[in-house]
Length: 280
Figure (spheres, rainbow, N blue to C red):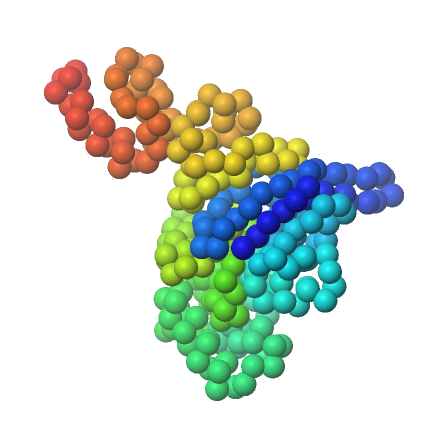
């Protein structure tokens, strides 16, 4: 679905050039769920904006469904394939009523009114916000607003959804709402690219791109990346809580299995060890 070959992006300014992406190559298959993580300035958001041609390569290529994003005649078709959700839902909502906001992109495409009505209703159902379609977005919580932004993308019926730190400004409840919604969309066949600072969120993906200095330095499963706790901490990252607890327990000489990633896996391992654990 998405393929990058030697992708490079340079921001030019009066104070000098800044290389944001440097020789980035990868493929993302149709229906995959990819998480992208990296410290500030690693190139995550710059990469995201290349997925639907908001930015064009300085060098190299990126293809969406074999469409070269650097070709002007392809840009419209690329954006029909890739929808984007950004960090701040308040900056994405443009209408005074929820259903009007979800319809906004469809109206710009010139979709017939009866089809707009159908798509808006389906999109609001998909994000469990149908009961709020007549509400003012200003009356919604941060998590609800972000779900409305996602509904706008769903209504556009793009096969790929790119989310650039969609939970960064939300409380824990809002983060759970958005991540649960993203997982449901993936289960329905959408290709998901999910950029996040939260390692527990990234651990839900099928693959993780770990970025540093404008490059993808690791491309692997969450289990392989996050259970290498020593390397993750060297790079300045947290690890999922279950990984951290498992590491500390191993230092206490508990014989836990390697590569524990989730709380459920940790609980199961501790249950097996329970006869051996000290009492009191």
